[in-house]
Each structure stands twice: as structure tokens, then as C-alpha cells.
Image (cartoon, rainbow, N blue to C red; front, side):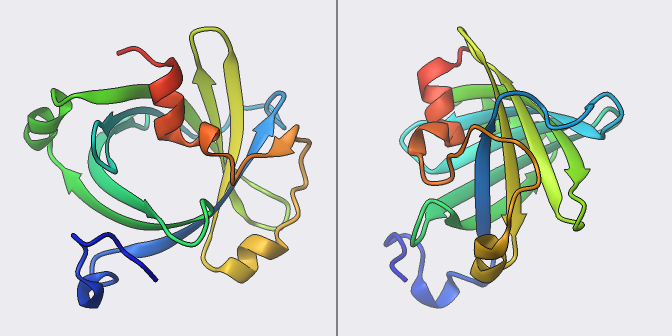
Length: 172
């Protein structure tokens, strides 16, 4: 695998993991979301980097995280490294130039027990519903058959990546 030069090859997996993910564009939520657990997410994609600063509120607690994602063999496979921050540390980063995106993420399990994140994103001129599913292997990713209605799979469409949505549509 080819990593960016700032990631030492012999350390690439010491503090990171592979994320396998599929994303589906939906017309509407596939079920009643009123009873589902959710988080309010505020993402700041730091300009000129592959870093994302996230603020997550789950209704009770607020969490802060700084992540770096690097695309590996496809957009569905990414190298991810994260650090959890306290509020003071978050404030050090939040004022850096960034693209901003706010969304609500609802969580549910499919009939076969797979965890699905359902993102509701309000853009300037429209709303998006995206279903995101993370897998632990390429084999799991390939064998997944969605049991919900969707418009199309957008896993390999970069225009649906969080940073691209933030660049195109968001305002802080």
C-alpha cells in the first residue's frame, strides 16, 4: 500500500485502522427515526489537509475528535487515525480555516444485525439522506445486500464524501 510520505510505513498501522464503508443515497429514511438513538455532528474539514475536527453531541454528552483519513485502494477503503480531545484542545483547532458541515446521524440495526448510520444533512438548497455502513473486512463489504430502498450506491462518488459536501454547500 502506498501511504503519504508523512506516514512512516513501519508505523502506518500502529495507531490507525482500515475503515471499509459503503454509502447509499436515500429518498427518505427507511424507517421511523423518531425512536432511534442519534448524534448531532459538526465537522470542520481543515483546509489544505486530510484532517477532520468533529464535535459530537449524543443528547447527554459532547465529544471532540481530530481524525485523519487517507484513501487507500478505493474510496470505500480508508486509513483512519483519530485522537479524542477535551473542549480546550478542541478550541485550539476550531478556529483554523475549514469547511463546515452539520448533520444528524441516526443509528439502527438491519435484520441481520449490521449497524447502519443514517445521516440527515440539510444543505443550502436541499436535504440529503445517506445510509453509511462500516465493515471490518473487504469480504463483508462486498457481501452486504441492502434490505432498504435507496436511489443508488454512492460509495465511490467523491461528491458525496463529507469534505466535498462541506466544500460545496456549507456555511458556518
